[in-house]
Image 1 (tube, one colour):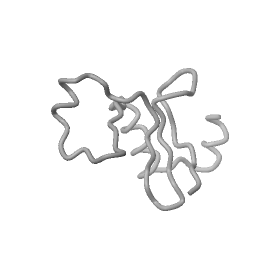
Image 2: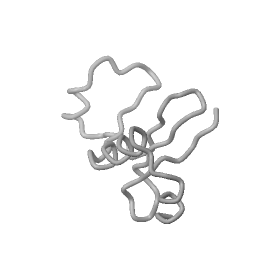
Image 3: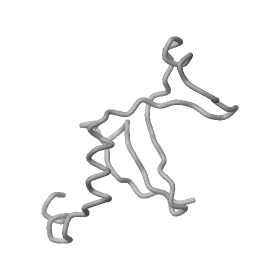
Length: 79
């Protein structure tokens, strides 16, 4: 599987971050949710699964980029 970096709200570019895979799925990089009360609210967590907290702003930013991708000239100018 190959990953393509989509974005992050971290100023250091670390986590949380989102990636798109070549299988059409999304990978979330972030700190594992460890708060016992919050983990108790999760449903059907299988062996090998974890939960990661992601800022709403990151999801909204990536959704905008996926639904309304910037023009190629804008992408170069932004980065």
